Length: 157
Image (cartoon, rainbow, N blue to C red):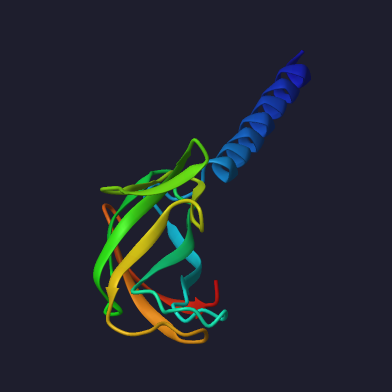
C-alpha cells in the first residue's frame, strides 16, 4: 500500500509538471502587443500604360500581433504626401467606395492586412511622383506600441 501511494504521488506530480509545461508553452506569448510589420509597399503613380500620373497613392502592408493584447493603429505619416489617412473600402451594389477610419484594430495573435480593395493608408497631395523601385519612409503610431517606422517599396499597380 505504501508503494502504491508513492507511485500515485509520483504519477500526479509528473502530470502536474507536464501540464504546467504545456500550459506555459501554450500561453507564453507576451502579454503586451508584439507587432511585426511586413510586406510594406506603395502604389506607383506613374502608370505603365502611359496615362497621367495620379496625385494620390496608397500604402499596403501586414501587421502581425503575436502578443496576447490587442493594439490599435491611430495614425500614419510620411514625407511623401501632405495628407495621410487611414482608409477602408466597402462595396455596395457593385460600387466600391473608400471611407476614412479613425483607427484600425490590431487583434491579439492575428494579422491586420492592408491590401488593395480593403484597408489601406491613403496618400493625398503627393510631394513627388512615386516610381517603381523608389522607397518611402512611413511612421505608424500605435496606441500601445508607440511609433514604428517602416520602409515601403514603390511597386507598379
